Amino acid sequence: MSPELAESAVREGFALGYRRVQLTGGEPLLWPAGEALTRLALDLGYQQVYINTNAQKLPAWLLRLPNSARNRIQCSVTLNGPPAIHAQSRGASHAKVVKGIESLLDQGIRVRVLRS
Image 1: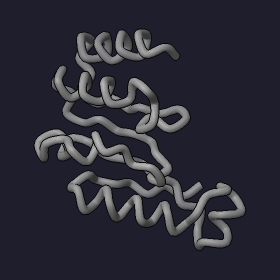
Image 2 (image 1 turned 180 degrees about the vertical axis):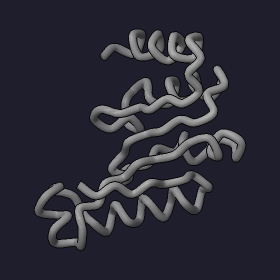
Image 3 (image 1 turned 45 degrees about the vertical axis):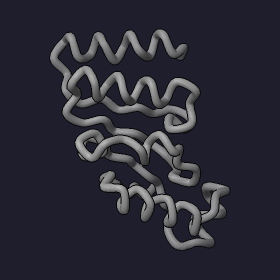
C-alpha cells in the first residue's frame, strides 16, 4: 500500500467514527512513512493506535513521542515460546525481542505479547 493510500485510509476511518486504528504489515515502525502515519493517527484524535512489530529495531522517533502520545499506542509483539523455539519458528533472536519489549515498557508504551 502506498503511503498516500494508507494516509487516506486513516483519515477516512476517523471521519467514519472509528477511534482505534491498527498499523500492520511488514514492520510498520520501520516503514518510511511509519512515523508520519502514526503521528497523523494521533493528531486526528484516534484514542488508540495499535502497531504490530517484532520489537527488534525501535525507531528513535517512537521513543521521542510525548507521554500523552505514547499513552495511546500499544505494540503487539509475537513470541513463539522459549528462545530455541522462537528462533526456529521466527528466525529472530528471542533476546532482542525481549529487550525491545522492555524498552517499549520503559518508555510507557503498552505491549501485548502474542503467541502463535
